[in-house]
Length: 382
Image 1 (tube, rainbow, N blue to C red):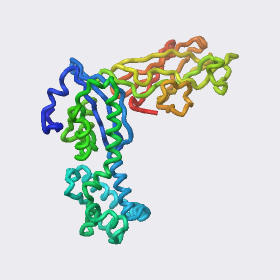
Image 2 (cartoon, one colour):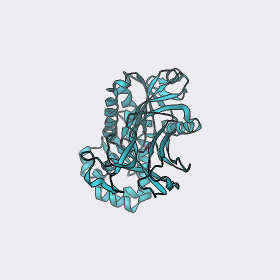
Image 3 (tube, helix red, strand yellow):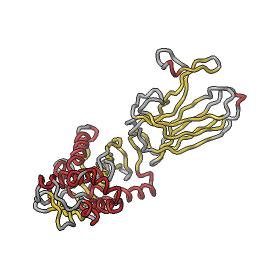
Image 4 (cartoon, rainbow, N blue to C red):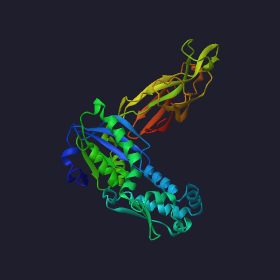
């Protein structure tokens, strides 16, 4: 546990993240998204999730997009699009070059410029001309160096980072306001974007007064290492906070004033309501590792030999119908129910089993013993 950097330099974290009742925040900021959760260390060394996963589209790719916008401003957006189309491999090389540069420490020194090597094809394509935008910025901010590099000042580099870094900080500051997280004393910063020197510096400036900021020396592979370790020992995390609402579809007796008329249909002379959302677990509820949630259903028709069930997630915990715009289907299964002599009085037990990173959905026809099973994505969101 010594392979970490903190706000006071290299140090062991054995005494920080291994003590019972320790609350810490994991900030996983990769290329595409920011994902944040809060854990508590238990007395037996296992981990309990204390807050649902939150985040947003605040990954390192946002800096790349700002860099691309800058290139369009400097050399012309239409010209840049033609270059991307005509020289795709060189364009990828250019963006890979920038990807490496954006992690560097030169951005922190106001007296240094960051030199991004340009492919020869790019230099030729832009015709070596000095654009009005480059004239406006001046050589101390942006310049073509030796027809080989695009040199960007520290201030310009920071400008590329600022929008997404501010979004990350604002998200974390909102989480700070939650009284449930008042015991958090440590922030663990991981993911590819976490290797950015500028992001690290901004995080320390903003949060080191209240939290210990821990950053693995190899933050970009820490997530992969953690996933492998969790795969070997999935019982490490004993409970999770559900970050979305899970359920299944069903039909029930139609209730006037409660159900929508457009959902009404008739079976054997009885009015029914179609497309109802049957909730199994709601957003912000706690599920323990290995917990199974069960519900019992019956066939709509006495002669039905095969019963189909669909599974859904929704961002609205008060969802009524599976056709609402907040609802996404994440799986389905069908179970055989051959004992039609029982008519509609056949119990079908539908269950969701919460494992480490998956939900296993099972339909069990109790009279025949037939079962059907499928796996749902634990982290799927609507």
